[in-house]
Length: 82
Image (cartoon, rainbow, N blue to C red; front, side):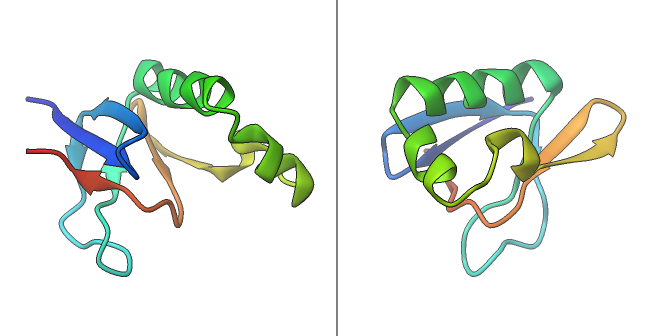
């Protein structure tokens, strides 16, 4: 079963599941590699890469590999949809 998540109702994505404890009140979705690639591509499409580059960060650096084809992003403000 997948769960649908969003950031600011601009970026919508499917995640494999959500970790039981959130981050500052936000959901921490766990993505497969394919789902994470979709999120990264959406960040480019939405023009969000500019803010990462201005801060000297790479969006790929924001991802933590949990193993078993599971990835999370640290500190992103996700909300569960529905």
